[in-house]
Image (cartoon, rainbow, N blue to C red):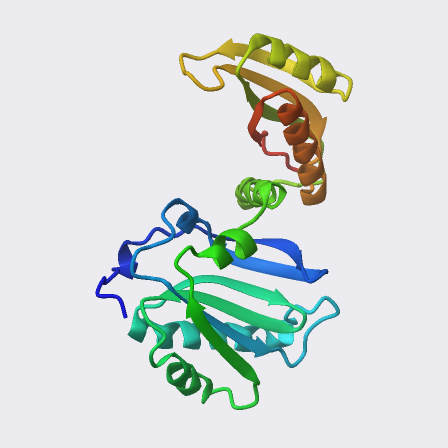
Amino acid sequence: MSNTTTDLKEIPADWDSYFSRVNDLPASIRLNLALNQIAPIPGLSKLLWFGVKLQKPDENGFTTNEEFQTICDIEDAVDAALTKINALFTAALKSAGKLELFFYAPTNEGYESLVQQAMMSFPQYQYATDSFEELDWKTYFEFLYPNHYEYKCIQNGKVLRQLQKSGDVFELEREVDHWIYFNSEEDMKAFSDEVNGSGFRVLSQDKHDREDFPYVLNISRKNTVLPYEVNNYVWELVETAEKHNGSYDGWGCPIAKSEE
């Protein structure tokens, strides 16, 4: 056991979720994205894994409304129990009719007994545990953390949630702005010429006083903000930007509401 004590309250949190595939099956992964900036964390080298079998999964292997609250209660109970060994809750995965939880901790001593105590309140559920040394946090970085496309979908979701809170009607078309950065004016022009054929128009072209990607392009096109459409046109712009040595920064739009 490490002598290093990590204050879990000081660790940043940025929880979000995304859909992926695990073993070619649909998967929903929720994780603390902020750990990407600070991991691996000294003193938290033991990966603790917990899995519980859902009793009434839906056709995709996820929780149904009927079972959702119980599964949340199980997650909370296991998380609370493992605070006794200073375990950091890192991610939750739902797939193939199971919920899996991932923690990093300074030790695995007492792990199984703590989980056993937590699960005494849920005797009808079958569960399993595992733990091993993982200094490099490989599971977090290579298995749980989103890939480039999945990360963009997460960022899109954050913007969409803010629009939803403001009463936006996603189905309504409106001008959607995008910002892309480049290292050269030539790359910016080549990108502009290509996306112009897809209906995008240039709103502005500027040069900022910075070493990396000083040229910024602002383009716009009329679109809905239905989630699947947003993910499609954002990814199209990401790929086109990278083709021309650029970096897609993000998007924004005015709130659209139905006329009464």
